[in-house]
Image (cartoon, rainbow, N blue to C red; front, top):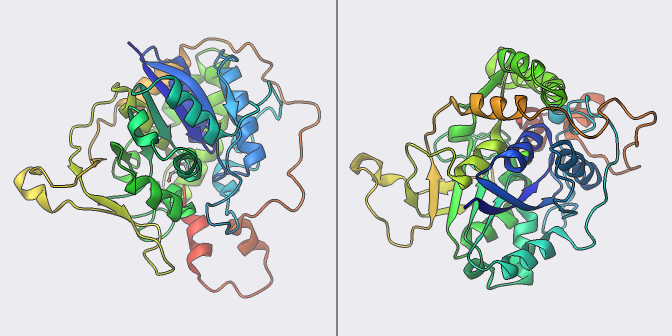
Length: 364
Ligand code: BDR
Ligand code: CA
């Protein structure tokens, strides 16, 4: 039986691959997608979620719009420099396809969990704002879901925003802390594994040799590879972060090391804000059982998973939607855009190193 999944995304280049993997893989029954702010503003994320389910040939999968910013009302910070102005590596079609659901992403989560008690896996690959809001709407949610899997955090690996914080957690630490604290089985697929599974131009060539879906994905990856070449790897190679969380949740990527331990998120204003602290002290004894442990921390997976994602998408054939660029592309919502990476470059003010300025340059 395929796993019933609700996928929450800040779509985003790698989110696009995650949605495609979930929509196309026979082991997943993708019930719905929720959008969330993060890589891009909420309007762009929602548009990209809709575009991607249509690209996958699954227009029946509902897309609900989620939160536009962090739980506590602080201003959102985006990563356009990583994912392109359109969240599609500046290679999207700009087309608005389909229409969003009338409920919010948090309401959608609650409705589907109630409709399928014990069966729905929530997979969140953006900031955890919608999941925290869903917990607020339905405190018994942890008893209603199958589990929660996130792409987020870093247990032993360095952060990608600050020295210790990963982007999805750093964007909304209060929401993440709420999600880590809730009594549900949580699987953390963090930078420990997602930085070690990468795509390169050889993968893009295989996508190009597929149908129009593959060629579209190859196109959006071009900018992403450039970003990672400069920020992380020194060569054209990119992570595919979010698809790993979908696959671990679905059981199609089985971690080779994934202890279940106690874990929490650092909030407050200090330099470790957004850090995920995982109690890995048992590592020298093969991770004996820990009282109160509820977070399965994925520490090792097979990096050849990248090939599987590429094959799935390359063999998906041709899209049923036009993939040429729309004649006139929707512009950024006025006054909505906040991208510290860009601001810090354009600013005539002093650009002394601050946590947030460094962070958006590093985040991926
Ligand atoms: C995460 O941050 C986002 O930029 C990616 O989509 C991924 O979910 C990686 O830190
Ligand atoms: Ca993401």
